[in-house]
Each structure stands twice: as C-alpha cells, then as structure tokens.
Amino acid sequence: MTETLIQYLADYGAALLFFVTLFSCLAVPVPSSLLMLTAGAFVATGDMQAIQVVGAAFSGAILGDNIGYLLGTHSRAKIYRFMKVQSKREKLLNNAESTLQNRGAIGVYLSRWLFSPLGPYVNFAAGTTAMRWAPFAIAGALGEATWVSIYVGLGYAFADNLTIAANLASDVLGILAGIVVMIGTGAWLFHNHRKQSALVRG
Image 1 (tube, rainbow, N blue to C red):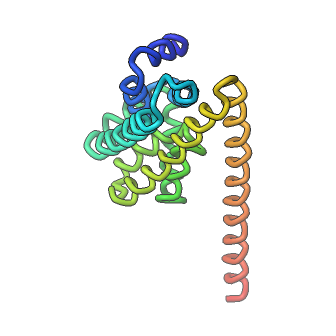
Image 2 (spheres, rainbow, N blue to C red; image 1 turned 90 degrees about the vertical axis):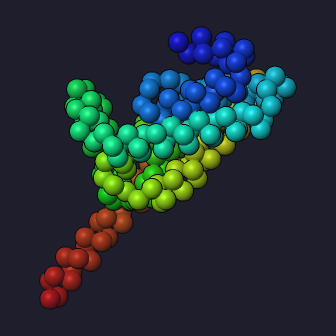
Image 3 (cartoon, rainbow, N blue to C red; image 1 turned 120 degrees about the vertical axis):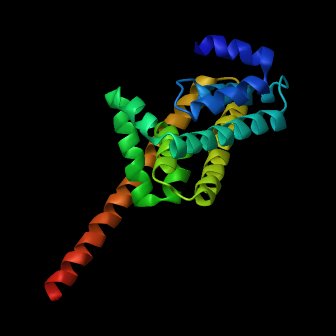
C-alpha cells in the first residue's frame, strides 16, 4: 500500500497528500508521515511546490481533526461501540480521554506530532467529552503545523536518503516523548508530595 501511494503521489501530488492526511486524522491506517517525507523530497528535486505540499498536508489534517471532533460530538454512542470492537482502539481512546483530562489543550497539541498515534482518538474524545471547540481548534492547528513542518522539512533536507529522515524523526520524537513523560511524572509526584505534606501539617 505504501509503495502504491508513493507512486500515486508523483501523479496526483498535493491532492493525494490532502486526502491522506485527512484520513489519517480519522484513524484510517495510511502512511501520512512517510508521504510527507516523500513530498518534501519531491520539493527538493523540484517535482512539487513547497507551498502546495505544506498547504495540502496542513489543510487536510485540520479538516480531518475537525471532522473527528464533530463525529465525537454527534455520534458518541456509535464511536464507543466502534472502539470497543478492538481492544487496541479502545485502549487508545481511553488514553486519549486521559490525555485531555490531564493536559487539555496542551494534550491536543502534543497528540498532533509527539504522541501522534493518539491524535485521531483525541479528536473523537474531544468531541465526546464536550471540550470547547476554540481551544481544541487552536491547539490542533499549532500541532499540525509542527507535524507538517517536521516531516516535510526532514524530507526536503534528506531527499537523497529518506530512510535516514524517517529514522531521525522516529528517534528524536521518541526521545522528546520520553522527556515529556518524565517531566509529567515528576510534576505529578511533586504535586502529590505537596498535597500529602499539607494534609500532615493540617
């Protein structure tokens, strides 16, 4: 499937990239990040225009996010039934809800690029939990801008070897994710320690 989409990218260009990023934000298993890397390489070789690539990827992702939000808002029961069919999907949705409860708009932002497997499920969860649309949309747009910039930029910079670009993105984002989790855990432990100390003094 991936090789076919890459071949189609050469023929259909930005239009294909738009739909791939849109569907990826609705939990459809398509290689959106890899396609953005490839599109970035095509920009470097002059086969595609940067503004078209960035615009298509960004607008597709934004539309996908908001469709997911609306689906969550208006089809909560159907979304939950669909997710419970498969344990992996159900776990991702539960993690997405936890992310929203603990981090709110920051969680939405990070789920666009740093914890991207959660992204589509955060969209659904934001709708089902009635998160206000404006903070969701703003955080989502900033996160998608980060996601698109990273992958198109790496594809452009490493046009001669996309394997290096893909591995670099995976390694760097993995390290960043670990740091964020570590900081979050430390903050939680500190907060609970202060709370327990306050109870003891009281």
